[in-house]
Structures are given as C-alpha cells and as structure tokens.
Image: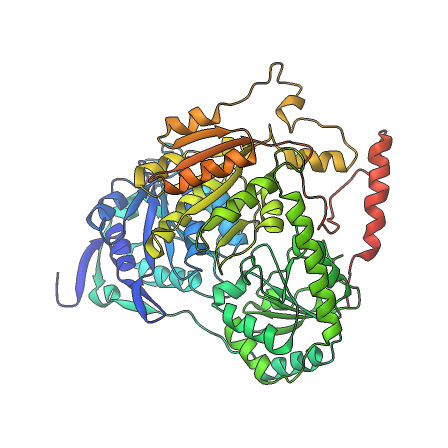
Length: 620
C-alpha cells in the first residue's frame, strides 16, 4: 500500500467499495447496501467469497436455498425500504446465475434496485470449455450472462480490474435513480475476480447518497392545472410511485385541498387508509365496483406514480374514451403513456407545485357519487368475507387476518388468485403496509419475498410481523425459504390456502368457455391417482410451526397463535376452487381467445368478450 493506492483483487475492491456507500434517509445515514444473498459455486466462492468473508459484519450475507428465491427476497427488501436501500445477489457461473433471470425480470418490471454479482467464464479462455459453459461456436464472447441484458437497467462484464472504478458508481447511480431504477448486473469472469490492481484510495472513501428529486417543468405544471381546473368529474389514480417518492402526505393533502376522489393501483395499495373519506378503492381488473364506476365517468384523470399497466386500465376500457389523462411521473416514458399530458417530475414536489398553483375544488355532487359507490362496495366486501357465507374462501381468510393483524404488519402476496382477492378485500390500517407483487405477476415470490421483506422490516420495526398469503400452486413452486426464515430467525406467518391446483387459471379457462384441463390436479389427464399434499408436515419438516384448520374461525385462532409464536408459522386451510371468488369489481381484460373453434361454448365466449372491445381507448 502507498499513500495514494491500495492493492486489492477485483472482488475485494467491489466489496470494499459497497461497504463504504451510505444513504441519507430522513437525516439518518446508513449503508445503502443492506448486505446480500448468496449461493457459492466454483464461479464465485474462491475470490468473491474470500472478499465477502472479511466484510461479513458490514455486509451480512444470507445463504439462499435457490437463486431465484434470493432475487425475489432482494426485490422485496427493496420494496420494504421504498427503494432507498438494496441487496446484492451473488451466484456462480452457469445455472446458478441463470436461476436469477426470472427475479431480475421481476425487479425490472417493478422498477426495483437489485445488484447481481455473478460468476462468468475465464476471460483468457485458456481452460475453455469450462464446467457449465455454453459454447457459441460463431461468437465465443457470448455467454449465459448476456441473457441478462434484456432484464437489467445496467449491465457490464468486467474484463479488467480497473473497470469497476467506472462500473460500480454507474450501477449504483442506476439503482438509486428515481426514473431509471432497476436491477444492475455485473458479470465477473473467474480469473478477473482474483486479479489485483492498485486502486486509488479515494475510490473507497465514504460517500453519502441522496435520492434525486426532480422538479417538474413550470409550463407542464401550468398546463396540468388548467386541465384539472376545467374538470367536472376529476379522479386521482395513486400508484406505487407515490410511496417511492415519499409523497403520501402530499397526495393526501392535494386530494383533500381540492376534494378529488382517489383510487389505487395494485402497487399503490396502502397509499390511503381504508376509512379516508376520499379513498374510493382499488381500480381496474382486480379492483372495486366503486373505483371502476368513478373511473368510467371521470373526465380528467390525474395518474400519479403509475405505469398504467393493463390491470389498472382494464386493457384501456376502464376510462371514458374522451377522458383526459395527466401523467405525473418521474419517468418520462410513464408520464407520456396513452397520449397523457405529461408532468415529468418527483411526485412529492410536483403535487405541491400543482396544489399551490390551483384554486379548483371538485363539485360536491361528484364526490358524493364516488363516496356512495364506496359505501356499496364496502357492504359487498363485508358480506363476501363473512365466514359461513359460502364455502371456505380466500376472501374469508383475508378478512380474518386483516381484523386480527397489527396496523404496521406487512402483507405479501403474488400471482394466482390472491392478488385480486387481497387487493379487493384488504382494509388498509396504515400507510405502506401492502406488497402485492403484480408487476411481473410472479408465482413463487410469496415465501421468498416475504423473507426478504421480513429482513428489511426487522431492521425497521422488529416487533411487527410479515404476513404471507400463498396458494398451493405457488407454494409447491418455491417454498424453501421457509427454511431460510427459520435458519435466520426472521419469522414469517404464512397463510397457505389450498385449492387443489392452479385454480385462478382454471377459472379463466372456464370463463372463456373451455373445459377444466391441466390446472386443477383433479383435471390433469396424466395424473391417474390425485392425492393431497400434507402441507403441514412439509412445512414442519423445515422447522416451522405448522397446523391445518378446517374453517375461517379456526384459521383466526391459529393466526393468534402464530402472532404469539417466536418463529415462522404456517397455517393451512382448504378453500373451494370454484365458489367463493369475488365476482364483482372487475373490468374487462383483454385475453386472446380462438377466432375459430368447434366448441360452441368457446365461440360464444369469444363473441361476448370481443363485444367489450368497443369500449377500448385507442387514443384521445
């Protein structure tokens, strides 16, 4: 070592750099990287593993059971920290790395920071072909890591130790950028990881980062104010970006000052508490009759922090064809969607700027209409979630847990039928307590994401719980992080609702005129003797407390025991695959149906579905 340089391997320098990056969160400095998830193999254990061992206190490394699950956990960790902190994932070359592809896509779709430090083949190529290497005969520079280019916001392959001096700050800047936020991938050839270089000592100086807050252009604000002030029936769509901006208070103040009804996206659930007078409910395909009734009549829509995914827009049938949309978003791409009038800027600053420039207040009759629709929707949800009203259902279990949980407990769900049911029926008790993963609608996120969320929650509110809702299909796809949660002492409460297969896709199959086929276990032609999995025994074998209950009342008692327990608990209940679904609250959703078929039921449904296409917006 000299006064100006420090000789380290590439891997050592990466870890030392990460350990010295901090973030200012409300005046409190903490490491921006909370640690990592890792599974070692020959592509990362000898060099990166050596570096991580020396930094194990500064950057704790959680041992995963599956690389895809590690990525899900990292994404959920970032959500819990509202994108202000991230985790890295390290995987070996070959299948260990490719297992991260799905979770990288999830982080990309949801605009979540995650750093991937993945092994790669030897830069020198002297030992080629090495174990797990894919050979491309006409292009030897291509490897499996190139597959991550489509699911990463930042991608690099380090071919010389000096390159990380540029690459690491660029990756960090991407992950902390409000508009470009997403996963960063850095491929680390096995030989380059161990090569040494004399790094400038200043490269490892402590640096404190802050999230940029971009002010909207005053002319865009002025245009938006003029359009909103002309409205007779305005509506606000509150997306996940409201929480990432820390703009919940500003959104609430704006809505109250101008008396504008608010509807929430799936990612925007828990922007407003349940009993707020202007909370009209979730909107879209998995929404509420109240929010969709308002959306259908609104003449001006202020879309804040949402990417306007098809489940929000009902494949662009949820809104009047002549409704005008204002896209308030830190990302230009999202702000301009569907011919919106863009306001490109941070939600917290932009909502304040809009409010200060606007004297408009919504007509009372419009607000009364919206609130009346909300009253009717709440009455419906109260009825459908009451135990005994029909067979055991998702909705009943959700309400039981909702009534018993602490206001600051976090609920996690993903894919299948549960996102719709949780979105429809979860009554928000406190802000920012809901994680329904529907950006990528990824089965298997539930348990792994719950574990990652709990790690972050434990750093913030260790006395609260992370509650996971999962169906049997997602459970069977990826459940090994029950074991991870037990090993690490990061308690989960897993509500496992068994409907005998992929019941929500079976419902879609039936709703389009098709016969039940290959979704429910009982309807699989290659399964001659269906049987039920003993989920209780399976969860118990991984160290969790587990019990099976027969009905929602017993489910509630089991949940109380899980709350009192000091380790992960799994509560199993069978629910009906056909009855008990929420039948109201849905908009049209475009799915591909056969234009030619010999099945008259399929043909009839095709005609029925296509008839709704007349409502689809194609412009303004």
